[in-house]
Image 1 (tube, rainbow, N blue to C red):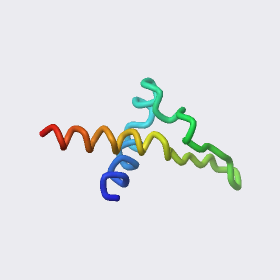
Image 2: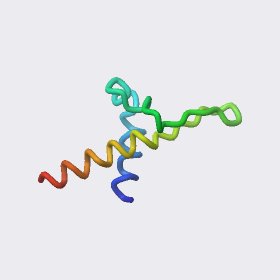
Image 3: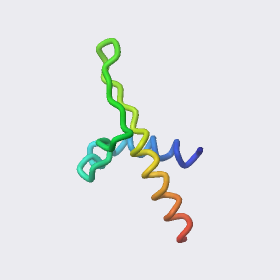
Image 4: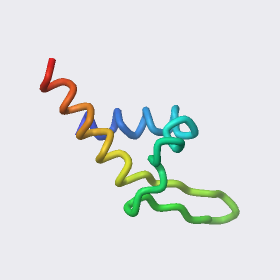
Length: 60
């Protein structure tokens, strides 16, 4: 759960840079407009970043 939250924080901070690599446009990522505000929930991208972080820690 902590890795998932860290992945969300990383994605929010580096979202524009990560979008060049396809993150943020995966099938599980949700974008919608609510009361005039754009809401973005990167579920699939956060899972992919969590798996990458877990793989890196496992290798170290």
